Image 1 (cartoon, rainbow, N blue to C red):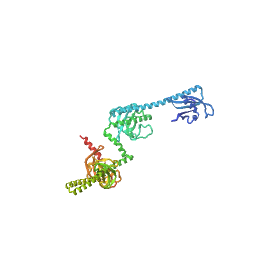
Image 2: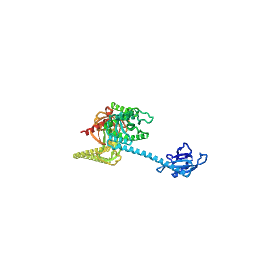
Image 3: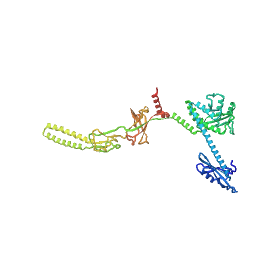
Image 4: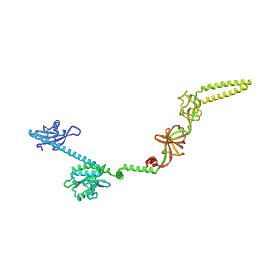
Length: 573
């Protein structure tokens, strides 16, 4: 448009940088960009049109050239520079040329703003249509209102929407029609046209405006049978699966162009899934259950989805094994090892601790000295009665020599009394030492920290348990106690020797329950069948009582089933 222009180039900023590079040339591949740097720099610094005179290196005549550089601004933001080269002109011609360039940049800015406004209006339309989908209480009202609004906005004769049901499409809403006959030929042909587009998973425009090849038999039938000029069918997807389609009808004098088609596709891709969600929300419980199982079943019987099929096969195989294979049913309980018999060593008399030779855990043999009481007072008393006995014997001999019979009888009685007291003191001296009643282990009694302390007669000093006879005390949950009987066998694994299970036999079930940790337990006594030198009273572990053979699925689920039965019984009328 500018007379005399020889070359032109447009510079634009490089993404992420502040440098400007040439992007458009006129004519193609000219060399202006090599000499335009000063003009570009001046226009960028002043942010207005500048005029520079420069000798064109490509022109052999050496005549000066005018360089006009004009910045491209949008909302005060600089995003490019246009540079024009032309022969030097008079001042008035230069001003006219600069005015034309400025006018062109204003037109360019208006064009960009117009495109932005168009996109903004399209976005507002989509938002308003989505709002219409949500403002109605019922799906049918929402779908009809949206289709009517679409028909008005898009200047169409009729807009219909259909959703996939099983293997076919059902038309759910038609613009400007609150009620319509789904069995009519028009609605049936519209549904078949929608089905045709969804089967091909593509947007179909009839009549075809390009060289695309589609199956159009149903669209042709709809157009010919009902005098429809132009048809645009747009399928939409939900979660990656085709869920429905929108069919738009126009007169033949208003065909669909490419720009409108893209705009319609954007609107349908937003509105269609929202209406599909509304439709699903109003379905019955039976339909919801069917839809929830439909997609996994489709994946199961379609090619691919190896992980799903393998997982289902493994689940079925596991269920079959649990149902038909039997296993050992065992009742588990926390167990404690105790001695079959225990003996206590008590203080035979009042006194003070003088010796303590053993502590709990020590192994002792029969008659080993466990400890002793202080015997100083007893030894003094023993000497006193021994001296008195010798004195009485002398008096007895003297009275017998003098033939004093009455006195002899009296002294004889006193001698017997002295001997009895002497024997008693001697027995007390013997009892000051505590001995082990049998071979075993000291279970309790640590007197090493109580030397010199007083003890009373009958006070327990030591507890001794044998090492060869033990019994197991099991805590069995009340839910399992009904399966336990005397004579049943089991295995015990102790924490101290986990690698050696011990066999035992149930001997007694106590009828008294114990409440611990919010549950009731019964004590079951059992006798250890295996002998081991590693066993010690007080050891704890886990015991399993062998009940019988039962199905694996019953073993795994019987506690849950019993809990459910009790709950139903509790709340049943």
